[in-house]
Image (cartoon, rainbow, N blue to C red; front, side, top):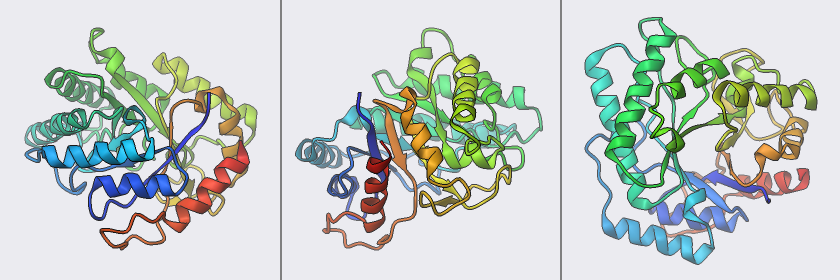
Length: 295
């Protein structure tokens, strides 16, 4: 099974242009936003024309829709104990699933948010309730995937146990459509020493698989500006941060990295690219070359 490398490409001009930019970097998938990530998006819909342009770009580039990941809005803190905020965040997550299912993509990843009452288990129950609500409202094959967090403040999802607790709240009949993914920067920043050795990296992946009952559905490939255990969610180009290049070689040697999206969320060199320019970002080109050299 091959590695499926991708990037969160710039979507200036539309998500169909993000598809072309990723493909022109030699990548086989991508991550994208369907709405502005700084807002709840609980009322945003997606037009048939936008869906048509997206699928035309996928067909043109050979990128498979089931490998595409949508990143939900950053503000959707469904871990919160504040009822009004939870209602709107849960509605935003459900609407994201609606938009993403209309696109026919493989999965939506989201950050659980902050346990505002300081009770991680109660927060996991709230996240599980929002996750269940979103899945029930949107039938289909698109999965809803918890992303591990860097662990700042009271954010939920820092550990394998916390991610496992969230997914344990999902009813059995919906569980196949729920899952998780791992961000390498978040792992490192939250205290997982993935840089220590190949054996230690395997142990960490084993810990998540054992706690949750399945391997990750995706990886975010990011180096870390912050030190081990710093709880800083600051992504760097691979090899430019505190993790270094070799741990990514070890990760790609693990069979759990195969046949799932491996998404770069690293800085783009040309974020202001013209709407009609499908050119690959130079940073994506260099990162793609690095990743292929590590396989």
